[in-house]
Amino acid sequence: MDNLRIIEVKRSVFEENDKDAERLRKELKERGIFLLNLMSSPGSGKTTTLIKTINLLKDKLNIAVMEADIDSDTDAKKILEGTGVQTIQIHTGGMCHLDADMTRQGIRSLDLEKVDLVILENVGNLVCPAEFDTGASKNCMILSVPEGDDKPLKYPLMFSICDLVLINKTDVAPYFDFDFDKCEQYIKMRNKNAKILSICAKTGEGIDEFAMWLKEQVDIQKGGK
Image 1 (spheres, rainbow, N blue to C red):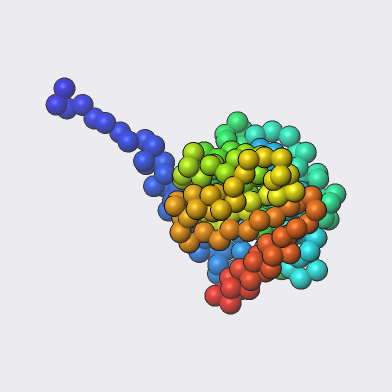
Image 2: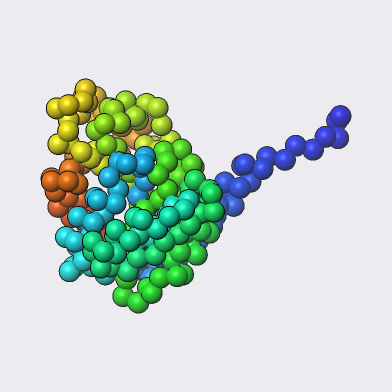
């Protein structure tokens, strides 16, 4: 029994992915391309938020979108029809997340000529996508009001890796027992540096502020070429 070998497969997978993600992040920075990894639970309003945001930015930035799903191209069609920007669908083959290699494959499928901003709409899931670094410049997640203000307590890793948290569907807050102050407190417990914005993709509330944040991040990335 003393000769039994134990192989830490999961750790090895994460370590290799982290190295690959750093390489991808460096490659994108050298080209002045900003990659946003957008995550959330299913039904939080990612696609609607993106359509509103892209339409505010597409005259200022060249934008491409990568839609990731286990199956279906429903959201990719919505983005293309709603914005007209370059959009591709990535099927994960049953996996509930994207890793750096899958992200790179998607990026290689885009026409990157003059692209400033690539948005990856990750698979709807608060667990797996948080574990795998995609090589993104920044991570963003959407928490919708109906999910509850205690989500940061239940999914600590997701909130700990996000640079920006969007609290969506503020228009239905009166119908849910959602405490914005408590939610912000819980988020800061997980990540004191996270920026928090309240938005409503349906009405457009706060979308301009999100768009402004994205534009600033793209300008910073281009300035660091």
